[in-house]
Length: 77
Image (cartoon, rainbow, N blue to C red; front, side, top):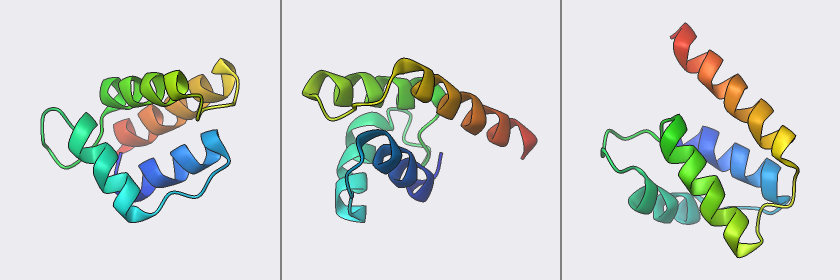
């Protein structure tokens, strides 16, 4: 997932606005392989973290649907 995709997904899941500075902080923490993208396992870890802080309010089904959509999109490219 690109930074813009992560920003959009996190904003959707939290109903909050995230600046690109916030996204960069998340990237520095969760892009473990430092390939410039957050892959599905890294994104799942990010969501678990945000859920533990209370930031993610949506149900698991919303998160699962979002992951499937991004996974399908990444496989198409």
